[in-house]
Image 1 (cartoon, each protein chain N blue to C red):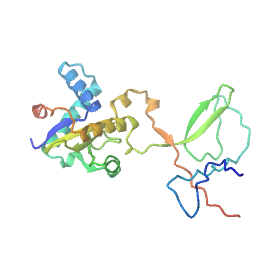
Image 2 (tube, helix red, strand yellow):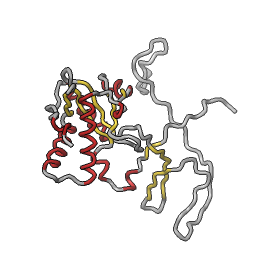
Image 3 (tube, helix red, strand yellow):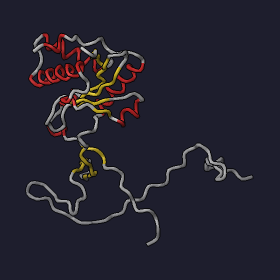
Image 4 (cartoon, rainbow over the protein chains, first blue to last red):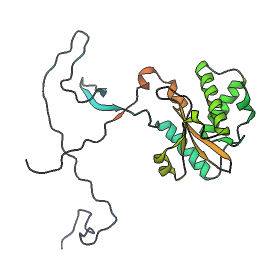
Length: 110
Length: 133
């Protein structure tokens, strides 16, 4: 008797299900450049042909440095904290909850 | 006044209460004093006319789609890079406007200068679709 251990035995091409497809394996990283550099008097090294301006740097305990490219967040973006505040406020508002009205007299003060 | 201005619960209301209480006690710092002044001015405009030109109010479609209610953004200041903004919605009752959140978040401003540079991961790189070369 044959057993399917893949866990997707119920997937039949002619009978699509709502189950998400398994993610395809990510493309493997390839080495584009391989070179040695020396740090200058101020302990700086230069990256050759860097594609991005900003990097997130991790200094590891074995002396290695890991650089991950980063981009600046657009100014229109909403920060995570504000978004969290928004989540809670909207949830309350949908339940009909909000604070008491701000005193209108406050707006007339100079 | 045409509209009642309310604060979203719990964080925005707590923030406003804290700011207002400390303003009355004269305990606001210089930056907080500026923020309070801008907030009061903006809320005054909002109460009078939510479409006031100075507010540059507009709906944020992405947030509206996310939450299922219309979310608007109004500016706290003009001619300033990364200007302060408030997010608001109409309700819970008629003639009510609820301020839901403030951007930048008050806690974000307490960090050091280096941490103020906001970085995020790169968008996913589009790899050319397969095909033998």
